[in-house]
Image 1 (cartoon, rainbow, N blue to C red):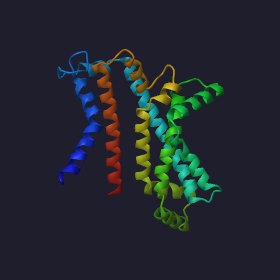
Image 2: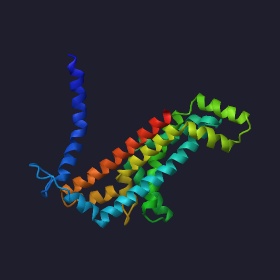
Image 3: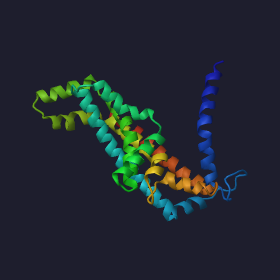
Image 4: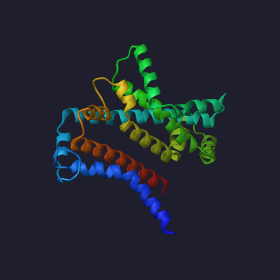
Length: 255
């Protein structure tokens, strides 16, 4: 009976990571089809990905959009969390619910709404509009993470800093932000990771300059290949790297 929890845990991890493992394995396939039997190992598909101008441009676009929108989403999320947690604002509960509400809405609905707004405003579809869309979906997450970390300990330190003569900007810069650094970093890396592999909004709000998920979708229409596995492995590696970096930074900051 003691082995049952471990078997259940192993089955859960197998269910989660088996597709990723198969994806990575057949990215090293020598043949042209990502199906058994395995022929390899070979790096030919990774070399093809790195030498493809469209793929490298889409990769760079994804990085720029993810990093840029992450900075904006975290900044806006922090300001909203600080304002609602530290100041008496009429309708605070309603404002919090309004900020978190986009989490309950489908990305497809958000993307279609943003597409209508962009077209009505006369803005062209580009990486900028995709970045705006990613800020819309990631701002509630950043707000929720940072707001949940703003406890009485930070408030006491802020009050002590004001009593010692610090201005509001200095309190935020020297007390609040350093104390909330783990939450801010966690929110930033999470928003970057979510933006990195987001497809629906990026597909609806871009035209010529596309992100990597949109480029992968266009390649999928011609069928499966080990090249797509190689691209998927690169995306997975970047996502894992971002998560591990966040864990290391947050853990070191807490120590």
